[in-house]
Length: 114
Image (cartoon, rainbow, N blue to C red):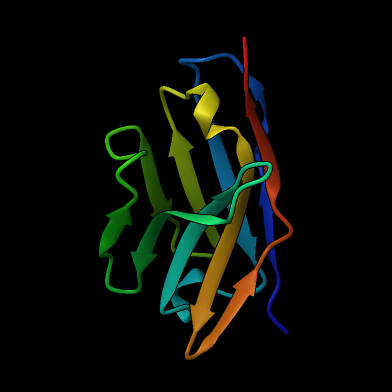
């Protein structure tokens, strides 16, 4: 069984930073890709960033230049979020893909408000 657990969310003011962590029950490199998604109230879940096993990075246009996805050699992937905006407020989810199966964490709330 594969488990993913997100952490690091919280309440911050506009312009501040947060680093989200995605802790996996197996090595991050066992996944063909790891991604972050987010879902704001009343909206559909949307893609934020991803990293493949080969290290290819991909970002949503709305976060390019502000967010950075990375991973350790072990079981953790990160999402560094700088210059946060109120529109970044959402529940952030980590997704790990193995073959044709996607595994999701339970999400962590990020609120950006003054």
